[in-house]
Figure 1 (cartoon, rainbow, N blue to C red):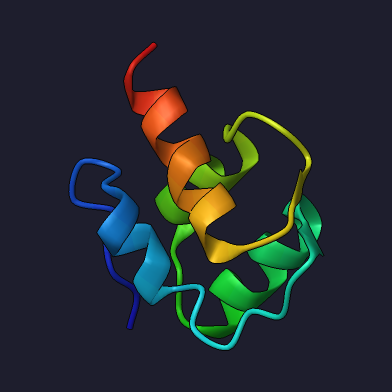
Figure 2 (spheres, rainbow, N blue to C red):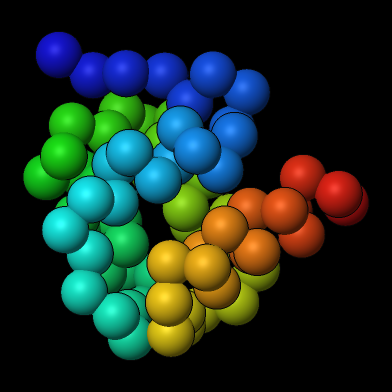
Length: 70
């Protein structure tokens, strides 16, 4: 069973990134999200994040904020 992004919120995305080891590339985020049951909408949100590498979960959350403020 997959879940929606529900508007693409950072908190929703974070639930799919549980267990993520940092630093990480965007492709690493996609892999763990898919393993955690993310659907195509979530994976698209990850692919559309600004930047390609993230040192911490806070970096991912910041990228989510940058994306939503565009």
